[in-house]
Image 1: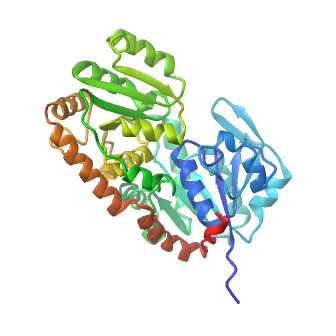
Image 2: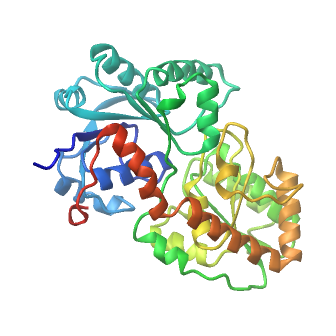
Image 3: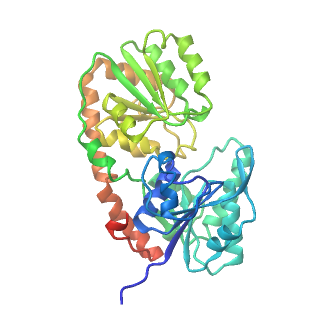
Length: 388
């Protein structure tokens, strides 16, 4: 008789597929292996058809079961409330539990499950290290690493993070490398994109408009380099502040700055097609990978980032242009844009290099090969294609 695969249960803060890296990773695993995603503060009727009823809000289609756990919201914190169905789902011993960190509530739940069911396998996806400058982040990280040291499996997205985990005494035989992957329908379209010469050097930023993303640095660089134009796709609390900055820099009146707001996958692809360079300027380890870099690289676009010793961003794009990339500060970004503007052929060469790196390290075929390690550890079996 064929082996029966255990049910995968993923616990995370936001409802997948979502717009962030954590949700995209959970989504791709759920699409491949099925099972259940249990998220904090999101409600559904617990069926795939129920998930489809909110498909208009999802950037990607969903074929797996999603459950929500009612929470009390305290600012950005989410405190899970007593709820019978999520608790039953969580404590079912025959389910393979995969915890997506960072999130304080997910960490607390993971510790409770581990203490109640110590013989149950403990599996963690370590998405990011947090900012060391704040004591409460350091306290969270100490507890998270203590849990990771007890885990059977600790998955992370880059060799940089795996090295840091090993240095933090997480057993090396528990560590698994599994970078994110692009949606199955998106990859072929991006690989078919070409780069067209335009009068201006078109720069693109994609992401949540939040302070740590440092889109203000890119805007200042654009203002300092004539012949460049910036498009920003995303929504968030810093939208008005960034618009005011654009006005003060003279970018809006000169039509060198555009805000697209939150965009669909199709609109994002159109923006990538119109760009030459993508910039991911986040300056903290909260940004640990940057899936938007994969989208740019698959599309043959140069991806630039700010280097950070506790992040894998620079490893992802792998672009070495001494002395300015990986960027250390805004002056490096200005120097790179000046060089790209002066040498259009360099933009083309870097774009070809980016696409080659994507195909070698991050393509869906490569991701599926990496998944075999996870399947062996967790006894997961991929679902038939017709069920996805």
